[in-house]
Amino acid sequence: MSGFRVPLAGEVFILAICFSVFVCLHLAGRALLGPKAWAPIMPLAGLVTIYSFFVAGSLLIFKFPIEIPFYALLILAFIGLIRNYNHLVVDLGYVFLSILSISPLLFLAAIVNEPQWDDMTHWLPSAQYLFRERHLPTFDIPPINNVVPAYPYSRAILHAWVNSVSGEFTTNVQGIFNCLFMSSTFLWAPYYVKLCLGEDCKVKEKIFLVAASSALVVPWAAVLGSTLIVSSYADPLLAVCFLHIFMIFILVCTQQTHVRDSKILVYAQIIIMFVAAASVKQSGIYLGIIFLALIWLHDALSLQKQEGIFYAHQ
Image (tube, rainbow, N blue to C red):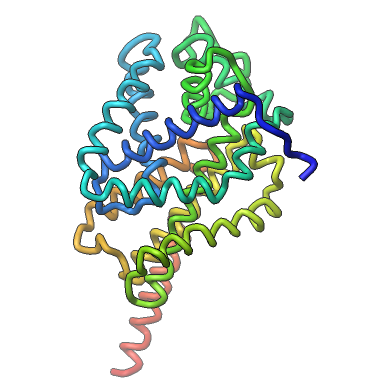
């Protein structure tokens, strides 16, 4: 409790902007994948869409400004709002509930301004570059942390957007987004209970499950450390990406999914989550390859075992 204090007006304003951007990312994910897709992955799907657009635009147009992807986010959010109109209240209600459940950690992220070593060398310089230059690095204006140019700028563009609205560069934005994206993991609880019970939960039960699953923050903070979570480190968000991947594969492998009749939608969500991990941190590429290799090995061994049983019966 000694780490908490009353947030200042500027910190509350930063929280409000981050919250608004996060909701827009969720709606952008709905615009891309539709109302039948899994709710927990929508913010990351929106981030992948916008960041891919930013990278593609930067490859085609010299000094492609960060304002254009921001306007694209607003347009996609509006499309997602229309596309998910019939389920909008329930959909956003669970999102607001999950954010409310993690609000203590959110306020801690807003008031903690003590960057660690990697914050100053990897994550904050990228965000400050976009905030100052308004575009991705070029040959004539290289980043100050040029020793690690391969680190993605997906989280940095969110940081730059928020600080552009607030009017000054602050160090606590990416920590707030770590907590916001972490709150999306709470939304898996109703899906998991449905998997175990074989039937859908009632609305009151879903509300309780989403709120109660916020207890996941306790072991998460114990493993990663609360300071790491509320800093600008990408590791918490990378862990969120792979938790989503694990949950998707659990639902798909057990065939307990409400979109099992649409394989294209399932495959699209899996691909987007692997792209999200790669766009969050460079090591997400290698971890994704390892993950897929292990799945292939498991399937190969299972198939070989089934063939052995078949020949034994013959």
